[in-house]
Image (cartoon, rainbow, N blue to C red; front, top):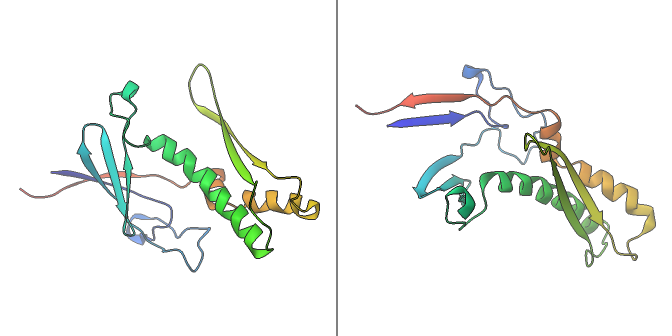
Length: 164
């Protein structure tokens, strides 16, 4: 049986030279495994922290389209991370979130299809306090996923063979 391990941000693995997460908070684990299983067809599931994240490929990519594709989850992680920072900002100031929306726009290179730019558009209602408009943008920019993308970790793929 073949297995693999991906060095993820947050792992403390001195035996293989992985340093602690530079954005580590005391509430975040310093080491977390994500176990990936293959659920049939093009479905791939990731289990961690008592949760299972299901993925599938779109029908056009040979899957059944029963769940988001992994890259879509990657993009959604950025948007939802910025969203939780905006939510926390508003909750701390007792600013209602009715009418607040965050829209993420992706720009891809037409030739290579490489992701070139991500724009986070924070749509605020007219009732949002003007004195906090710049600060709520700064809050969204504090998102950990954005920070990791700004200074990406090393990703190492290793093989472990188990059994006989």
